[in-house]
Image 1 (tube, rainbow, N blue to C red):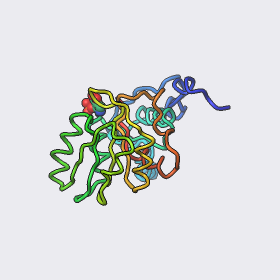
Image 2 (image 1 turned 90 degrees about the vertical axis):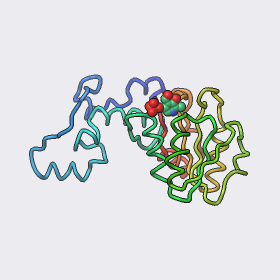
Image 3 (image 1 turned 135 degrees about the vertical axis):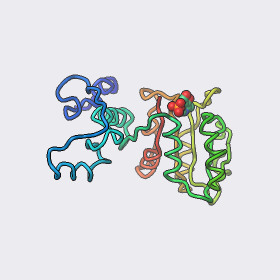
Image 4 (image 1 turned 90 degrees about the horizontal axis):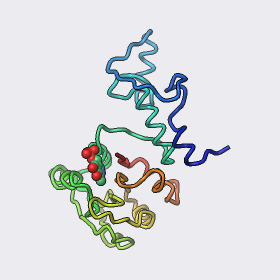
Length: 214
Ligand SMILES: Cc1ncc(COP(=O)(O)O)c(C=O)c1O
């Protein structure tokens, strides 16, 4: 039986492997993890990027439960956590960008996103073009041969423009451009951006390109 959206808000991330049988995941704070055998330690090392307790900075069961909850609620294939939104945005961009690439950045982006593009990206030899958030299908004319990322923020900071996410993402996908979306001002309950996409290839791209949520 499939769960309704509202039920999912209550049940998401509550797998017993994280909760140990209580209702909510306990808050686990740690750096060093103790293993009984070298084999267990080896297993944790190999699986440290796959929700296995290895070292606190790589995540605890509390983080793993939260990652599961976000993935389930937003309908993604995975979730990476960062200590703040600016870290999520800059790491998502850095994961894909190379010197000589071009970013299409929405003009209503969060100020630290603009700072990151105007300072660190510029220093790395990455060009940024700021576009009108309401450009819609007109984004096609701004795509260059070296455009690597189309970055959206919807609703946009301060002025709250709502972008044509499916339309613009479709065009980007046709040009092999990665789509990233800062979804801070959206709501998981109403703006299920990952469900707005039509092809699995596109879905993967939007998904791997981190979405930030406060
Ligand atoms: C649009 C937007 N994106 C991202 C963030 C996250 O920023 P921070 O680095 O402060 O967590 C914020 C915070 O206000 C925001 O408004």
